[in-house]
Length: 237
Image 1 (cartoon, rainbow, N blue to C red):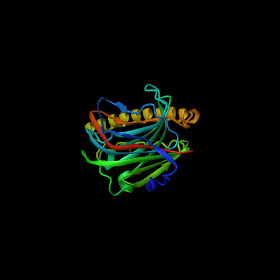
Image 2 (cartoon, helix red, strand yellow):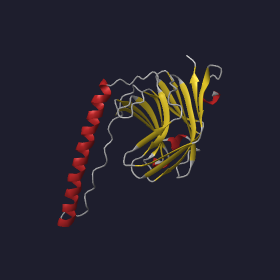
Image 3 (cartoon, one colour):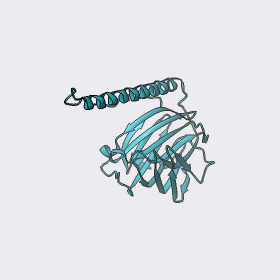
Image 4 (tube, rainbow, N blue to C red):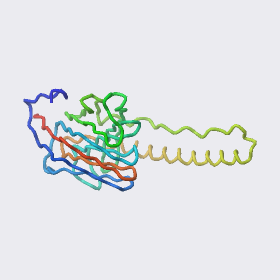
């Protein structure tokens, strides 16, 4: 607890979880579990050693916390750890099931001990105190998040490059098709971003208490997350 700046004399152990294995093989699927579903916490420390096996790097393992337990349209916070670019951490805010807040961290660039390979184990810990959440991997501080922080600006992909010989009809036709597809993608991304931005501005992002859970988040293909040495500490008011 002292590693995470928490006074061990202020609070109590809420639970120590037995080993938990969560598997999913579903497009954009999510699956969470916790053998202590009735434990509700406000300020807390949640920690586990997480071993993963994912088909794609954008899939990963996650904690949800201060959740209302609604599986269809939850109000909750989530920290999602993925193998993407050798290790990224996303903090997400869900309001009525919609993502209304995102903060991305390049964990591998901050934590020298972060392992992004399949079969690797990393320790993830989250400290929630009031409206601030601090994320650690392998004892290294990744960053602190305020859920009220506005959505980051939209980052668009680069447009297709022009072929060296635009006079070649085959190359020109392929380029024009690529440009048309690019414009469709940009329009879709902008519309989705504008929708989320409007939701984010009016959504309630302040969840003072709720349950916690551990699980897997799949982009597509098989994803397995194994949680060991998991524990939840309840910080006294």
